[in-house]
Structures are given as structure tokens and as C-alpha cells.
Length: 40
Image (cartoon, rainbow, N blue to C red; front, top):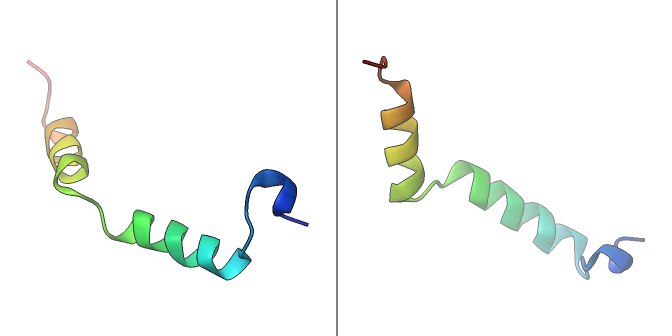
């Protein structure tokens, strides 16, 4: 079902996507902080 999209193990894909969304790296935190500031 998902093999044509390159997803061989559905639960590994789900856990990986969940991990990427919930555990942002330092770069993502930086982008969120700078995007939050009012523009000058």
C-alpha cells in the first residue's frame, strides 16, 4: 500500500514523522524565535 511511496514499514514511518515534528533541532527553534519577533 505505502511501498510505492517508499514507505516500507508504516510504523517506522509514523514514529519517524512524529519524532521529527516533536523534537525540533536548534535551527528550528532559532527560526521560530526569529519569526516570532515584530518586524522593524
